[in-house]
Amino acid sequence: MTPHAHNTDAPLHHHRCPIECTVFNTDYSYAAQKIGHNAQGLCFESTSAFHKGTMLKIRLENYSTRDLDAEAWDGLRTLSVGEVTWCRPTQEDDALGTIYNVGVKYYDPAW
Image 1 (cartoon, rainbow, N blue to C red):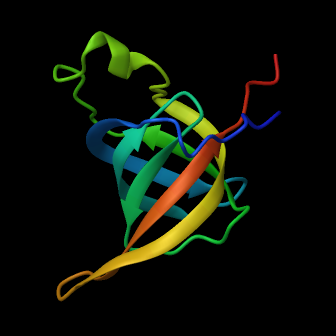
Image 2 (image 1 turned 90 degrees about the vertical axis):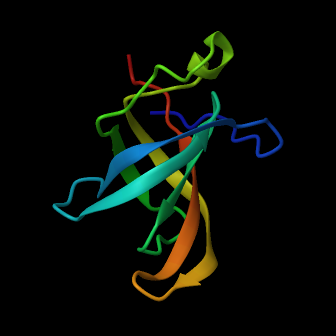
């Protein structure tokens, strides 16, 4: 699989929905919230921190596409594999602890 060139300057299509992140080839799975996406990758919020370079399988959970315009479909993947490119703490939540924003670049399919 070849990673897309992750262009952090590319605008995100803001679309929030629940996702499930699984560290590739493990049983470690995390619930998270997708914030936005583009053709190169996505950004999500999580109560778990991820190391740069971690390979993730990401699956959208019960996503709603009613609010997406035609442009926002560009880069939307319901199941993808990608690599964590950055992870930053964004806020403290009394109930959840630290919330992290995580950036992921997509890998191209191997076909």
